[in-house]
Amino acid sequence: MSLAQDERAELVLTLTAVGESAPTLCGNWTARDLAAHLVVRERRLDAAPGILLPFLSSYTNKVQERVAQRPFADLVDDVRSGPPLWSPLKIVDPLINVGEMFVHHEDLRRAGPEWSPRMVSMDLQNRLWFLAGLIGRRAYRASPVGVDLLTLDGRTASVKRGRGKHVVLTGRPSELLLYAFGRSAVEIDFEGEPGDVDAVQALDRSF
Picture 1 (tube, helix red, strand yellow):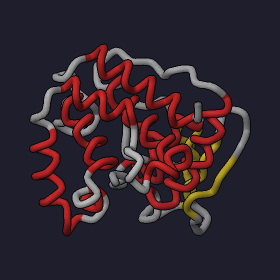
Picture 2 (tube, one colour):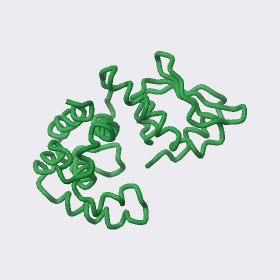
Picture 3 (cartoon, rainbow, N blue to C red):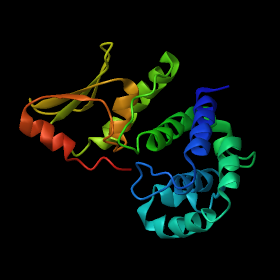
Picture 4 (cartoon, one colour):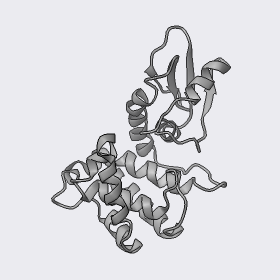
């Protein structure tokens, strides 16, 4: 199986274990809402664009609300089976769904007060490191200071260039990716002048 399929399988196990009413890190979404989001993303080509395009989000939200009314077990089954054969996402699933499955899996795992990072394979960490650099360039584009990412094993990526001032975010690739996606339940160290660190932490990193 691909890394995306492995992470999808782990996500499904967690969805089943926590139940439909479990909280997530996605605002007021429950596990049911999160599953409905994934179903819309992969199976409703008419509504999926509104996930990324604000001017289409009203229609997407209405579709997702209707999808979320289906039995939870059916939603989980759709997440488990992944994009259908007719979906453009079917072919590119191994390439584009690793980050999606990982981040939303952690949205479920880290929603409570007692959580700890999951130990994942080096292969997955390497893929998440690539994504952290890619997503980081968008997440920190409005930063008034430079932003560098640093892994615990010494890999670096500059995601926002600054004029002299910069902040270094240090952590595992998985943690750096989650933070770039707007999640704050992470294990990351910040290095820089206090005001610069505050400015980076205050950025709107949501997608």
